[in-house]
Amino acid sequence: MAKQTWKPGNMIYPLPAVMVSTADKEGNSNILTIAWTGTVCTNPPMAYISVRPERYSYHMIKESGEFVINLTTKKLAHATDYCGVRSGRDVDKWKECRLTKGSASSLKYAPVIEEAPVNIECKVKSIQELGSHHMFLAEVTAVQVDEAYMDEKGKFDLNRTGLIAYSHGEYLDLGKKLGTFGYSVRKKQTARKTKAAGGKKANAKIAVSRKAVGKKRTTARRKADR
Image (cartoon, rainbow, N blue to C red; front, side, top):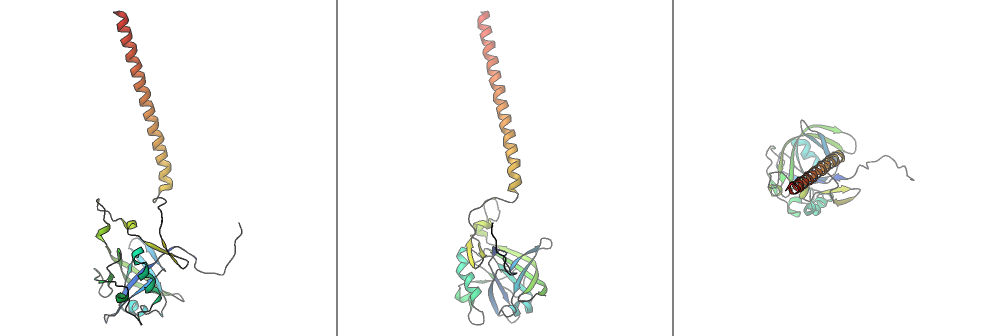
């Protein structure tokens, strides 16, 4: 297999394409699209976003110490792209994309995007000035989910929302499910159980068959005795 060696760069794809909503203390708000985001800790729940200092939302996040990571879907794909290529200095992205500001449950300044199926509310804990991007390390203080995607058992069906991903300059549908977490091990266990269950069924059939043969022989003997 022939491979080329390129200069160092970020080629970790696919990534979530999220819309981050934030606001300053004067009430000015904005939305920016970010792919440099992810989970960094489970307990306490923490996430990060990396933002260029020249972005219009940068000073809002730094001043208020708040932002919301809003997950995006196929229905929000156009808005997701628009909020990534237009600046809040020039346009009102809420108005242009017909998005609705909602109230966060744990934040004072940053709003949520009502149309997003999941809103992850975050409070900045530290800022790492890495270079082209500054990383906002934040604690997740609350999560809002759309009740429309709750199933009959009360479980939130996230993958039914139509999530999209970003990979090498393209927005993509997530596509067909290939398995669930742990399926590589569970598959072997299931095979063993199936085999064991099959063996039990086979033994049960043999037992029934032997019992039936025994009954026939007993009946035949009784008739012969008569």
